[in-house]
Image (cartoon, rainbow, N blue to C red; front, side, top):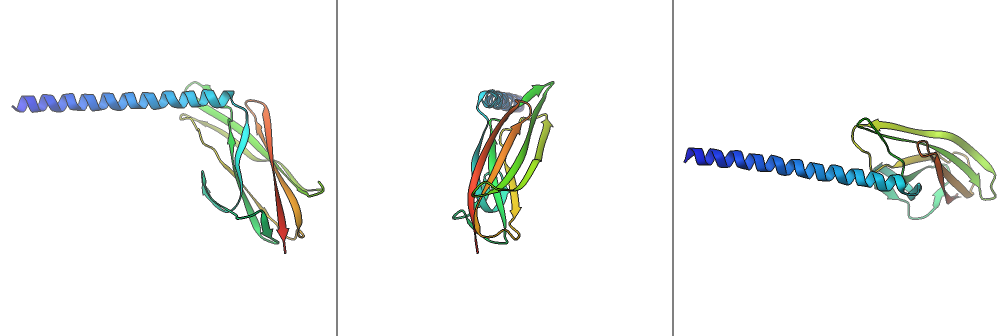
Length: 171
């Protein structure tokens, strides 16, 4: 009887470890397919949001409107989509930079920063979900309508995309 129980235990352990290995292989294959799809997709920006608080990927508190009080600091959240992932020798490489431009409603440039963000990341596990944040101290900017433009440069694909968000400073 002890032998039967021991045999059942060994078979059960073998089955569970084999099942676990099959599940891991399936997940790895799905991640590779996702990367293939992203690498063929158009570079873009989604969920560009003016926020009061940002704590992580898809974890932010959006402001109820695009109107903000003068002198405050504001925060923007966004997710670059379809960044190119280079696969080489068991590693995954993503590299993008970001520029920002702040203009008045009539297009007068107030602030410009090129490559204010430089995300050059190489890892042994694929990165599928990425987010970025930007903060601006409104300082002494007078009330009015402003445009905040983000330009994302995918360095590996050699492709760019941008998004402009219009907001209003109120007294």
